[in-house]
View 1 (tube, rainbow, N blue to C red):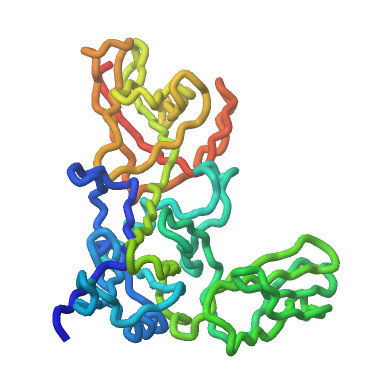
View 2 (cartoon, rainbow, N blue to C red):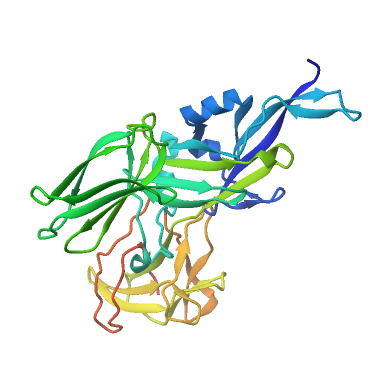
Length: 380
């Protein structure tokens, strides 16, 4: 047969803003295989075998390679794939390694909204949901959240508010083609029940829409795959293999975003307070003006809250593996008067709305998604 080699068709590379950049090369210290286990689905593994292709995990993600042989018949010998296939989708599953599962979920942004403010959140991640990353050409992979994993035949029960009336229920595939319709479904104690039969239909993402006589439509998304149903899948990655990859390899990328919170310092002064306290930062992007003065357990407590510099707009600061920045508590604004270095929030900390309203002197409503840190000082 002569010389045989494996050539990269495409790679999928993942980074994470929680980790620091490493130069050279310009990459984050996030090693995928330490937190995530990625492998092809059963259907994709079968496709790879038939196409004489290989799946290889890498520290950055994974690569798909094809086997080729040296064709000496042309004047200039060339490597030719054993099997050439047309454009097709390949699907891979992502599981969280048990050791890093909770930490990864704590420091990773997993919602579809524009920002960390609860008012701007879109769909929130929860254990029954599946992160769905997809792309049809090389470049940045987009993601969504799918509500459920399902087999190709199941009974779907949906509860709507009392008085919604009969509902029309439609199921569409990922290309928005209607594949099932149920007209005038009559509720039983406000439960709408239909049998979803997708046997013979492609595996993949589907959306069910319930249109009741009264009230807004309700959408539910699910991913249909008998092999995946009932398994502990964190994410599904669907990428398009292009025939052009035989001549020009492709690269897919996705950057996981670090979760952000507002930072709030409670500086508990256990002596008679004197002078003016401020929180100073060596990072000009963040400032911590005094938000309020409270009494906690009989002690004067200064509350400092993260803002954009020079404004009173709440600032959400991302978690980082290394300390985000250095903050210091100053007395009378004098650098030599540093009282102590201030802590950064811990990834495994908590978001609290314990102080839901402060009425004096700022009349500021505190929000959720806040990392609280208590600092105790003496000797002012």
